[in-house]
Length: 59
Picture 1 (cartoon, rainbow, N blue to C red):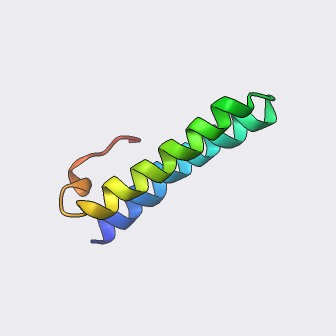
Picture 2: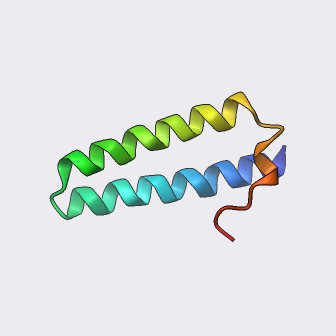
C-alpha cells in the first residue's frame, strides 16, 4: 500500500500542478477541467488500490 500511496500522491501532484498552471495562464475552463480530472483520478486510485502500484506513470 505504500507504493500505492506514493503513486497516488505523485499522480495527483501532477494533476494539481497542471490545474495551477492553467489557472495562472488565465485558462479558467482548462483549470476547472484539470481539477475535475484530479478528483476522478483520486477516486479511481482509491477504488482500486491493489492495481495502482503496477503503473509507474511518472518515472
